[in-house]
Amino acid sequence: MIIGITGSIGSGKTTAAKIFGKYHFNRIDADEIGHSLLKSDSIEEFGKEILGNKNSIDRKKLGNIVFNDKSKLKKLNSIMHRPIISKIKNQIKNIQKKCGADAKIVIDAPLLIETNLKNLVDKVAVVKCDEKIQIERILKKGKHTKKEINQIIKSQIPLKNKLNHADFVVDNGRDAKNLESQIKDIIEKTENHNSLS
Image 1: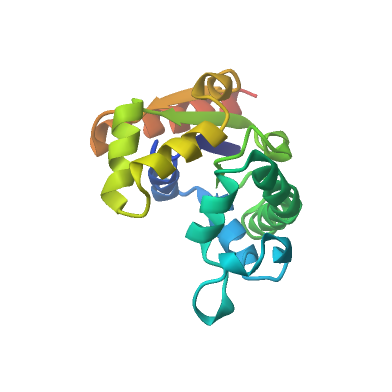
Image 2: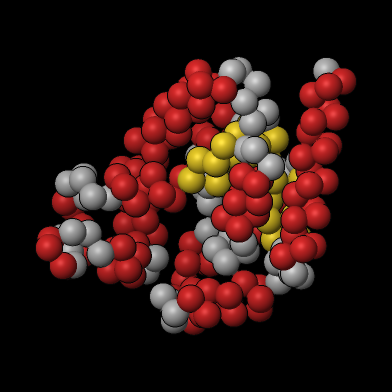
């Protein structure tokens, strides 16, 4: 069983994916894979202004460029998506080789719907919360200003579009206990479905 988990920035999809991990799901994090690929030289065309210390790519600087320019965001995605998907496919193969074809896997991917990743999963879970809560959560981390957060939200497909693809909707507007309860419910439903099929 492979579950793809997605949601807008600050919705808590990674927290939800980590809860799946508590219940013996192997977690694949598309963002982590993307960050590791950014260490390569594949983004030369964005100029030296995206470089930080030790000539490594500064993700915040790169983000400020692409979230203010749709054509540059599209270009970045065209560079990054294929190698990210390729690495995810390899990780799925490795997990299934190690744990068997029925291995439980959760793929944490903000662009699950926008890319071909949706074709790799059996079920899609969309994590949502009120936009006010979403913005507050991101501000607490201290990595983005409110203006930057709004630009990132605008660059992502609207939540209602993501919900159209959802097999499960997780409302993360309350506390951690409530979130875990919803994840456990999804796990029970998918396990029951598997045992019936």
